[in-house]
Image (tube, rainbow over all chains, first blue to last red; front, side, top):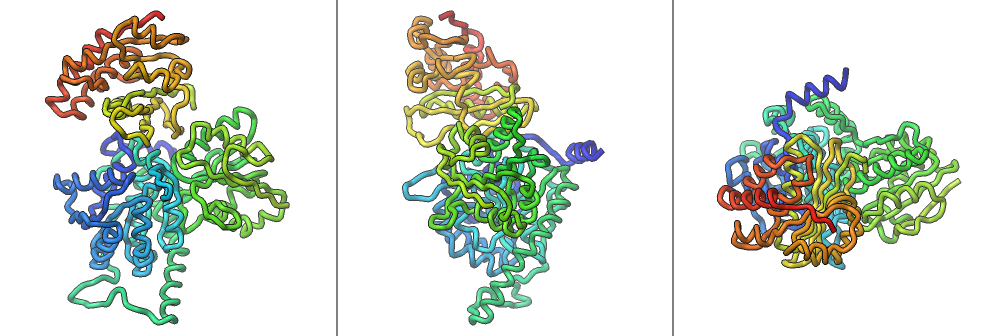
Length: 404
Length: 186
């Protein structure tokens, strides 16, 4: 029944099925939510998002101010100003561009501005690489943004629509980053179902009932704060981000109802009876991990995949629930945290979750692996080996840690 | 990979339009209600450098997001790419190749366990476009062996991609290749 209902909802809301890259899907989402101000500076692999948006604006398909700024620092600064005045805004960047706007990331969350940004993840220099990984996104991890990581072009489109609802909710009022794999998603053409604009507009009503710059009711934005107030205000961001998880779940539920989808803050694939769990995020490593789980099951090995869709705030309870009966867990990280006890950033989050869930004390293996940015064609097979082997996986730069 | 997925790799050189050709096939499949994904191998965006572009076509959602190691069909824009990528060794079923003659095909392919479809795309594309940009011509030859996607939808997308005037001459090249492409017995 539920399936039939979802299908009939889909029939009603879907306007057309197009072949789009994740970057174009992002641009289509921005078009459908009716933004006021777009400011961006091009960088590979983000460029095609803002090219498409420039085209939409030039054609009159989006009624927005498009500001071609001279740097990423200015791009985020420009949308901050607009958002503070009550505008609905969008920007996008990647890699060095995200690093260049780094200080402004903290200003956005500290000012509690509902900025939405798309970030196809890319490796950081040096050496120079344009290929996809998540080092740039992980370096923005502590900036106080909600961070979603999509795994398909459809999900990029859907997540950006959800992002405006989440960011502008008065209980949240935080910036939202929607990230995904550079190149392996940003430049991959795949089917995307685009919705009738009226449904998207209805789902994302503007929230102007928030603190904003208005000459009729003057306020000051961006003041200096003495240490006691600084602490208070920053802690409000910490709390808001923590509390946002409930709102994010609400928005997911309502989105699923409105658009006939099935999103959650994590994705569970063949997990119900899984002895071996692969935890990962993004498009390439999740798609390949799913293939690996299917192959492992063909060999009689009960494998499953947990995909982290909401990265910040971290879905601790969902992770504990997914791995509590597992014999071994492998985390496929797409970024490194050099000098940390364990180098994988999400691996660290999973270890923390395991302590919260009191899983560490019993016999329980955790692997971490860092496949090279591009995900080689043998990655899936290596994932299986990584699951089955108690030895250190040789083909992946990674380590095995075990407790109990 | 599920058995119902067809994997195609386009082997070309920078500037020949391999990436665009792969996009067109994926777009055509999506327009016919199928699932498809297409992405190029990046890192060598220089005119003349070897380029690979991948397409997966399926009746189910495509999960894999990795380069194709063993394509069902290889579309080869230049015979000299055969040895660069070991194409006869890695290809499972069909090699669709641009060559100067049947002899040229035999000499350059050597041993291959599948079937070879030959077209002189340099000649056809030069005739219709005035220059040897072979991508749409090679699509015509590919359509001889690819039944998941129909020629009408591909023509539609070629017109949309290249615009009315340039699109028309590309469609002419595609149609001629579709007519004259032939199976070569090695």
